[in-house]
Structures are given as structure tokens and as C-alpha cells.
Length: 607
Image (cartoon, rainbow, N blue to C red; front, top):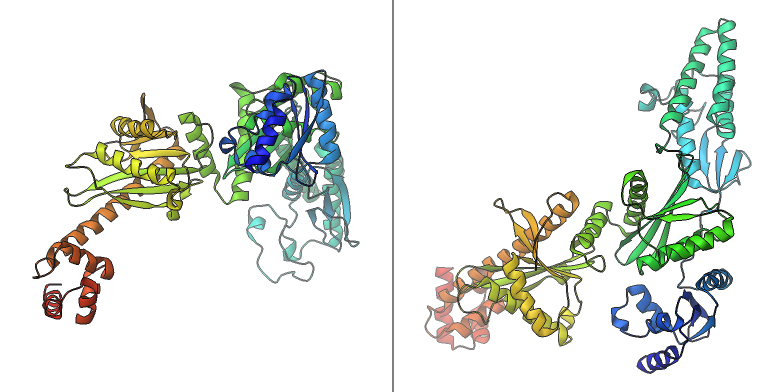
């Protein structure tokens, strides 16, 4: 790999400082990534220098690049247009490719005397009728739920008329969410009329449905069918209520698309929330895969999203900047025929819309990676609060615990993607520090931990994204000296407790950062601090017991500290030693039979 990187570095250093498009290729010559650059030389050389510092996606890409080609363009806009065209042509593996694996969506009206209205991704049941296709599965699902609620249609799994009267009506009937078909009081003709009204509502919208139902209500009233008129009146009221509270409505008649990314466990998801005339009309989620630089990912995602003829609104809201907002505005203006503004809202209602999209992205990614949105949000908030370059996926925390000079220990715990990672827990005995000195003990532990790391010890091979010390500014300053001495560049902070032993702040080099106002972050940091304290004090107590056992054993003639320690290492507990035979004690401690017999009698009596 080293020789190939040298070749790629030399080749990239010869590129011109001009706009263009580059095509990365694998060993077989297949194009695996296409990108555009304002300055080709600067952009392409960045791939092949400081490779270890790349994020996971870029590192994986670089590891399989064997060669590259490039095309020089007159302007950066020309490069952007060419990049979009080439990606569409080649569909490279490492570019963001948005594929809809669910296809179109349909409203399905099942067959029989008592049909149901459901959402479906297929239209292959000859006994059912369908309305569609529609591009948005979210819109179809929402409308199905709304329609069944308004017209009080059954959503259970019962089959009618087979299940008439078999069971009592469910809760939906009692809270007026279902008309109670299961009671057997509604004829197929009456039910069919309601289904026709529901289908009309789907096809023509709430306004036309209200007009038609109003006509039917008036006609029923004139015919003195007051019960029917009352049911129609209630249905009209339900439609109007739904129209008033449908989804989430903006105070302004805003029309825009809102995009947001979510990152966790090295993976990325995106959410798109669409508003037209102030009404939320659609929501889409996309799993992108490996995490990259956010600015590049937003740019590429926007390009892929609008490349297949989707309507481009005049306003696009993002949760962060792209590689070049102005360039994308110019590109979208060219293909849409109207002005397009790309904004990153900082306040007001647009920020509310952006926050909603971000929440949807977090929830979707949480489902994909098996994490809760609270855990994802806490790590994102921690990154922002501490100004970290990336979300801290791997966090190490340290605590010193002592009971006199004989039992001074430290615990190291690891949190991976917001949860305890027990395989990464480590314990340390304090060896070099004389007296009770927490700062010096913390220095010793961190120096030993990173000596193992620099020596290539597999037990300490992972480099943490963040280190949290159980302590304040003094602990941070003490360990910072060690890091400066060893050339370690890992974000370092302390966890400060209040008088009730709860985490109240993060200690940094320049002071303290309050955290108790952020509930999810406060919960995460408190959990980490409690866990490292529990782990270290449990080890300290165990070590103290072992020390006491060791002192007890040395009371036997011929048993010194080394022999006592050998016995404890072999048998672990008092009960383990007590269960050993004389022959086993002789072999373990390398002692005579006479001494072993004396030891055997001692442990039987004393333990």
C-alpha cells in the first residue's frame, strides 16, 4: 500500500490548480468515486496525505484507490455540472446514491362486502382496487390513518361478516374511532356508501368532500332522515378538524424543502421534510451509510436528491453549510429556471423547521443502528459543547480510588456510541507514586495507558475520541503535561460533581462548562461518572481484601509476601485457598510438606 500511495502522491502533485472533475479507480480500472474540485491539485492530494487522519469512509476509499483520471473545466460550475452527469452515468460505489427500494405507494381498497382502506407498496391483488401510484409513502400512510379516523372505518384484523358478534367491540369503538362493524348492525349497503365517501375524500381532498357531504346532509334533513343527517354532520366536522390540525403547519405560507443529517456509530442518515403553502406534505428518510465530512455530504446529497426531476423549491433549508452554498444555488437556478436560496437558519420559525428535520433524521438513524434518539442527541450535543471535530464515538473515563497507600488503584471505562463497552474496561495498580497524590496517580495511569498505545499493545490499540477524568481543572492540567510530553493529541476534559455527587460541569483547560441544563447530555455524563466510580471503587475494595488476605497468610512461618501473593493469584479467594489440599499448597507456594501442613491448618481455622 505504501508504494501505491507514493505513486498517487507524486501523480496528484502534478495536477493543475484549476477547477475540474476527478475519477478514482480501483485495481480493475472501475470508477469507484467521482468528485469535483475548485483546485484539482489541492483536493486530490488531500486524499493521499495524512491518511490515518481521514474519517472511516475516506480511509476505506483511499485503501482501494489504484489510480485516478481527471478532467479540467473552465469554471467550478462547469465542474459541478460535469460531476453530476458522470455520477449519473457511472453510479460509483463510494458516491451517495439515493435509491428508493420501496417503489411507489398505493391506497388499497380491499374486496368483499366490508372493504378496508390500507397503504400498499404493490398493486397485484386482483380482488382489491387501488388508487395511485404516489411517490410519497409517508403521504399515503398519513392519509390512510386520517381517512380511517374520520370515517370511523375498522382497522382491526377481524373478517366481516364472519366475525359478527364473536367478541365485544374494541376500545376504538368506545372512543368513537370505529363505527363498530363487528356488532353486525351495519349493512353492506350502508357500509359501502361510507367507503365511497372515504374514497372521494382521498381522490378529491377535504374541500370537495365537505361540499358533497353537505349536500347529502341537507338532502337527508329535508327527507326527515335526521339520524343520517346527524352522522353526515359529524363526518363533516371530523374532516374540518383534520384539515385544521393536519400534520404540522407553518404560520407562514412557506414552500421549502428542509434537509438534515444525523451521524452516529460512523454512519449517516438524512431526512427531507417538504412544505408547500405552509403545509407539511411529505417526509422522506435516507440511510446514506459511512460518515464523511458534513459539508461534502450535504452537497452531494442535495445533488443526488434533485437529479431525477424532483421539484426544486425557491427555498432550501439545511442544518449546516455545504461545500459551497452559492455554487449550488447557481446550479439549481440553472436547472429549475427560477431563483433558489439555500439557507442555514439560526433563529425564528425556519430554525424550528430545521430542528424538526434533524429530529426525524436522528430517529431514523437510531432505528437503523439500534440506538435511541436520546443517545444520538447526547453525543451530538457533547461534540458541539466541547468543540470536537467529530462525534465522540469512543469515550474513555478514568477515576482514582484509594484506601491508604496499600490499595491505590485506577479504573478506566469505555463508552462506545453512547453505551458501556465492557471489553474496553481496564484496571491499574498505582506503582510509582509515593503518598496520597491524586494528580500524580492520574498522570501515572494516563502515561502507562498511552505508552501501551504507542508500543502497539493490542489491549490498548484503539485511540479514544475523548477522555473524561473524574476530577476538575487540576486533574486536567496534570494530565495535559503528560500528553504534551508524549505528543498525544486527544481531547481531554474533567467531570466535576456537586455537593450531592451529581455531575454539574465539565472541566476544561480554560474553566468549567455547565451541563445540567441539557437533560440528555447531563444524563450521559452522570452515567459515565457513576460507572467509572463504581468500577474503580469495586476494584479498590477487592484489592484491599486481597491485601488483607496476603497479610494474614504471612503469619505462617515460611510464608512471605511473594509466596502469599502466589497463593492468592492461584486460588483468588479465601474459600479457594481453604479448598486446596496440602499437596496443592506445596506445589503452588513451592514450600515443604511441613510448612504446607501448617498453612493448611491455619487457613482451616482462620478462614
